[in-house]
Length: 248
Image (cartoon, rainbow, N blue to C red):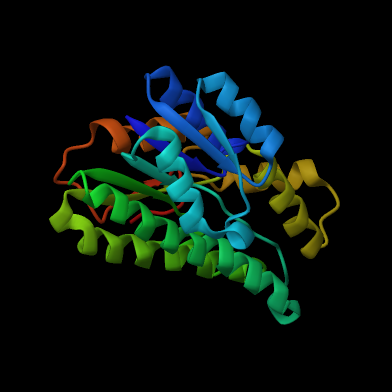
């Protein structure tokens, strides 16, 4: 199995790459953080690509990964960006970067992977979305909107690629224990004039019906299930891993 994991230097992407390596997969870890990608690639016995999907081109990253691997069986679109801003104070540059990475790069990477996978008449694409796509988040609007777009792209790609043996699904993790999640919530606390970060985080955790946050490694298990083990009949699906926050 040959996988490309974008945003693979840390957090969920790192967990996916390491878990895939443990299963014997050949992995390319792509990230703007070249040193981080190298470290994860070394740990999973794979390759690293230091790439900025916005500047370097998401399509080129997919093509480069396929050359390194001798083909491509799975694309995990994990790279993402989010910034906390009050709705009335949103900046154009925030929207530009969020949509460029979370939407445009993901869509173009998926199409590039689809063209490669068509040649072998098989392949799987897994997009990382979020419960935010179905929530009203006035301090996180650009991110929420971008993830709603990911949901739409997942469905469109699934229908376009189904005749070619390629399955496209998504995973929507809830609050994960990652550095990015921590930074996001600290920024949200500031917007809400909350100074006790620990209490703020505890209150948000308490809103999760199962009563705890999820570890990246647990989400990675679901991503790999879709990549390796899910029935071929499953496509255009969104798997919620939000502990009950997203009840659909």
